Amino acid sequence: MKKNCNNGKYFQLTVFLFFAGLAALFAQQRADPLLARISAAAMWETNIGDTIRGMPHLQAGSVVLAGYNGSVKSFYMSGTPLWNFDAKGRAVQYIARSYEGATYVCSAAGVFMAVNRVGRELWRLNLGKPISYSPVVGWDGRVFIPLDSTITCRTASGNPLWTLDLESQITFPPVLDKTGSAAAVLRNMDFVKIDQFGTVEKLKLEKLPLMIISIDEESRQSYVLFYQSGEMEKIVFDESKEQGAKLSKSKMKSLPATPSAAVNRGAEFAVILRDGRALLLDSEGNAKWTINTHETVEEKGSGNLAIDQAAIIYDERGVYAVTVRGVSAFTAEGRRRFVHRLQVECSGVPALSDEGLLYACGKDNVLRVYKIDVKPRTIPQTRFYGPEPEGSYGMGNPPPSPWIGDRSRYDDTNQDMVFDEMEKVIKSGQVGINEPIYAAYMMEMIGFFLNTPHYSPVRPAVKPPQRIRLIYLLAQIGSRETVPFFWNIFDKDPEPAVRRACADAIGIIGVDPTGRSFQSYNFLLAPNNPNMDPQLVLAAASSIARLCRFSGPPLAPEGIRVMRYFSNLPSIPNNIRAQIRNEIDALFNEGLDRVIQ
Image (cartoon, rainbow, N blue to C red):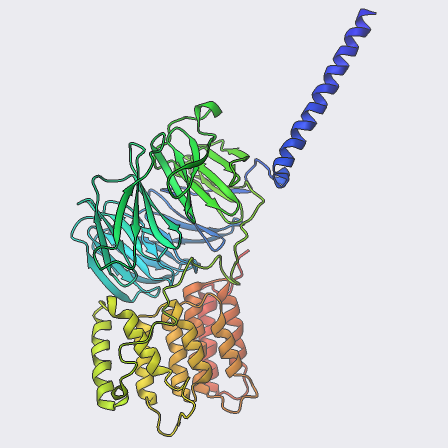
């Protein structure tokens, strides 16, 4: 009788534990039902053969890794190897990637290079010594390159825009702020904001911060500076103030411990502390919530995070505390979503992609990729690449130039004089603050007929040779934002030579991530178009080939398809057809025809 009673108790206990386990499982799924489909095992892994330096660099569905021995490798998010770049010597760890997926890397010998999505070198710049911080890519593809006390700015295709000596060594990795400027700290304690045209604002600090972030506070640009003691300081940029007085600072509340990483979303910002706690704060530094991550002692973590062992992400999915040992995810309200612990400690901080993939490079030199979140980002994606840049420099529609009301600018002699002056400045590589007014002038002169109802093609205000000269000059300072202007002129200008120059200009700029240029070329070069110009077909094909080489797949295969269509047009001469097919063959030989899977 006693034995049966004990068996009954054991049965009740088993049933209780079974239902308790089910309840716990259902509770976890109610917290985030998407996570029920996530596995702890890696989706794929590969031996890199080198210890990875810094974070993996993600963009356009792919990852780029820099190793201690100088290797630079790229993989698609499915695990497909994309390229292994030979930097002609050891590469340094400071890498950046553009919106189009181009990679900027520097060798230990000081050769700075741009590499496309299949590992082809696009252009190079000999700096004489290696960079000490990652370059910053601006909204329109321009690249800010820091070296000692200088910042050099180049277009996406490598043309020089300006070089600036800040008169004190840069001691802090520059960051891209919410106005598209680069912000950094100098050894002489100056905080500097350098805009896209090389205009500098400075503010003296009392001590060097650990890190800075940019926040967008009530439509004004602000920065939060973090110090070793946990102190925080705010710097506000006021556009309405006089030059040299646009920056001001104020104290904020202190953090309860030393910060290891911080990031903003709008006016809020998230911080992970050295003791492993994560916080979400408002623009005044008031904590909305504080929570333990997997790194706190209470969660069996180390409780001691160095600044190079952590990163934090805050987007529409929530807050992610990413460290060399795992990831803790929280909602924006501070509710824990999940914890993913890594079995192998990483050599650098892992990177979390928009698709919810974690790229973790172990100290065993193995790259492992985990699907840790099935909640993807919901921001709009472009057809060929990822999310668009946060803002625009307005170069596609700049304010009127100082010459807008001067009728003498249509005089041939006056035009030659102004053109010569602009060309001299642009070729010097120091266009700088003149860039917006030069661009405005050139766009007004090139497109003078667009808003002129009584335009006469017999006696144009700006003759075709002059428009062509300006088109090539505008391409030299080519912002991606000016590409739609060239589409417009290509579509509407009655002069074939001008349209050919526009196609060339788009190729020189090298960037058309939406593929809109292909549509313009297709429309104008339709088989039933009585005004088809064979030289224009060749110019369009050459332009597409340059765009394919810069951006690589997935834009390139579509560009090759359009070029094949051109090469089969019955109305073009055989010599033009042969040149286009030679260009297609060259793209095939470079591997640009492949669809990445």
